[in-house]
Length: 521
Image 1 (cartoon, rainbow, N blue to C red):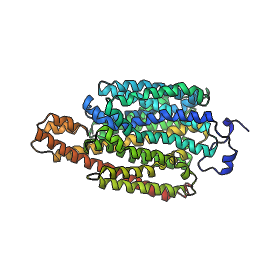
Image 2 (tube, helix red, strand yellow; image 1 turned 45 degrees about the horizontal axis):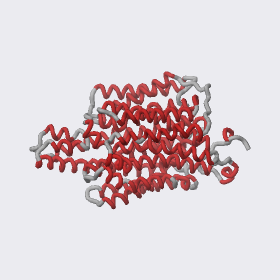
Image 3 (cartoon, rainbow, N blue to C red; image 1 turned 120 degrees about the vertical axis):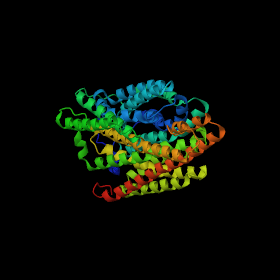
Image 4 (tube, rainbow, N blue to C red; image 1 turned 60 degrees about the vertical axis):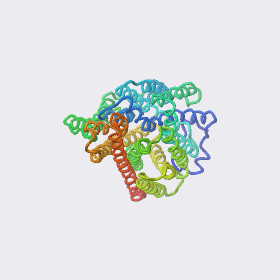
């Protein structure tokens, strides 16, 4: 029997003969996966727990202008900007070494965010968290693909890895609610520190040995171009999306596009490209990239708005909000573990189309339910959506990564994560900025004419600002401001779910139309 390093790569839906002949993972390797998914779970909770903590952060640090959006997604932007570099660096210095270094940096960044005393410090901590996450993700995926050579075991290991990420995102609100009920908002970051220590202690003993290739070159100009292009483009687009249509924002977006074109040109001409453009010749990989971006774009806005809606409009505490979202959290994790069943389906395209059509219908139901439905009804609807939608992103990611050669796993994972991160970040910038603008307009329209204009403007700075502003008004005016803010935020949240539903249905249509051309069945 040949060593694991020489075995063929597992692919989605490999036959039973291949599964029987491939080497099976040992108990130590499964334990290695277990300690690998724990930090990934915590890493992904940071994305959604922040939505729950934003009202408390807004009240404590008083972020102004676009600062709330920067707090929310600066990490995702920087993760997207550096992910490609780390995908290649994992090949050069070894996946295990890079992963352990990233976990150490993540623990340090968590401490910075925990004890932030102003919005700028919190944005800095979130930025470092994003960079550390960018290094962790491709390194972890390389280890999973290298460790689990048996196709059936690989499907389970991949689903488990993605379930940790999906479960963390879904469990962020209930976990954050429990923490915020008893501690201050900084504790949602502090919990990452002991979790990081678990992997730093156990990783050297349980993870696959380090495989480095010092012959891999990293082109410094490509690194600079990739990071500068993403940051300039994102900054410009975010400022435009939040209503700051200035010469600076337009120039920043234009510079970002120009740098991106220069980056792509250099990848075609340099002898050591940071990103191998030959990866994009694969039709399956290209389609999955498009669908992952669109799917993340639609889902992120709904994930951002709902926890805040339950607190601001329904008046739930952080703990109560977390408990409401516990059902969807469990449902999302369980749905992700169903992915191996879809991986073995003969008509994956139709199966996934059905998943997204049902998801879109569920989003439409949420729109109708939000104004007056009971919390039990909302929990049931959200749980069904979570169970049904979870296999889509997991299987799409698996099909994308396994479409690439094994030596390009880091790059393929980086491209997948950059695409997903940009989809989420773009959603928060465009749709988030759009619903915030809508919220401000409706708040202004519905606010009583007797309310001070500066109070209405202050309440429109962020979704959670109205409560703090109302405390500075007399009883009648405060109640009027809260009533107008609740009505405005309800409509803004319904609009976000409208985008989510429409995008999900669009993905279903695309899958039906292209399934035979891309061999999706």
